[in-house]
Length: 404
Image 1 (cartoon, rainbow, N blue to C red):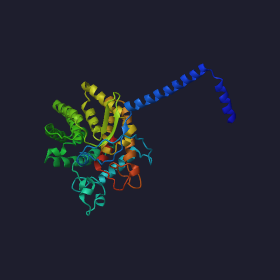
Image 2: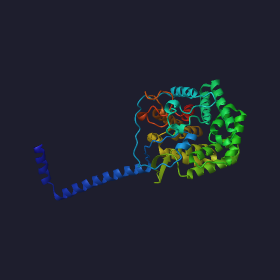
Image 3: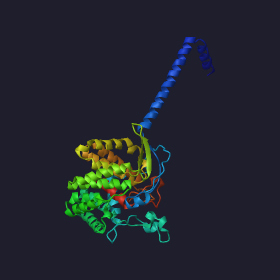
Image 4: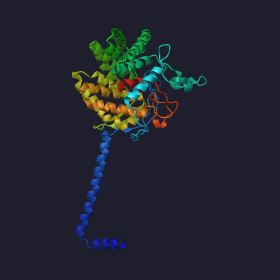
């Protein structure tokens, strides 16, 4: 080592002044090049790389969502998220579908409705205050019947078992009778009736869609998630009836919903190519789904392209762990399936299946704490607790997506 240092010292002593200047220039050139490369990488991340925020907050669908997602959540300091490898092998789609259907059927009640949350008596015993229980002590939501019917319709499309169609009709007919008392009760479950009409062709579902649609035209909820659902429903009714007034109102509500300051859970922020900062919230995917449903017509090609671009920009697979409960991500998965049908591109269907696999890996219960019978509400597997709820609507939506 000493001989090497002596050799280097002797060589440096023989370097001319001109050579020393050349070496200095070369050093500064290399140093400057490294700075430029580092700066370019930073700008690339700032332009298009989503930065996710971890934040756990419960969120179910519709009645429960109004209880938990109705307050603005403060934006936290962004932290990078990475996808963690599965703790257990991801179950196959058919296996998940079969077990979820069994779970849905197990929650059916004698009064014609469904329990929303399994093991409720154990989690919320009589000596516990209702405010400390899931959903403030409420165990049954009547509109859940629309979601169970959607799951049965999905299963029927795959297996053509008459019993699945019978179950779907039973649940929808029971709900329709309940909603006749006040049509507002069914304002946010109309896609399920549209699906039933498409599959069965039975006019009572069309008449129900039109009746509720008329009431919906003159009523709207200020919650951005529900307003997006209304926009999608009005677009669906317009497709079924051919009446433009429904699609006109759908577009109006879609624009209104985008302009509302989000009230749901904040997920993450990113900077688009134009440098504008955009935030993703728990109701963002509902806006995407409403837009895909609304802008299927040839004269709305530019609007649909904007939605496609937005889905590409928010890069859901890369930041999937930022989506902390099913209701925040499921509408985006459905949007990809819809785009696959509209565009005839396997790319979109492949992206939807990729997201479904990530969904199952994150939310499906396959460990010793939770029996393998449904997707949990919001917890990650590594943080799973025995009391984590498996709400029925999210699982019904999962079956529907698995059938696409």
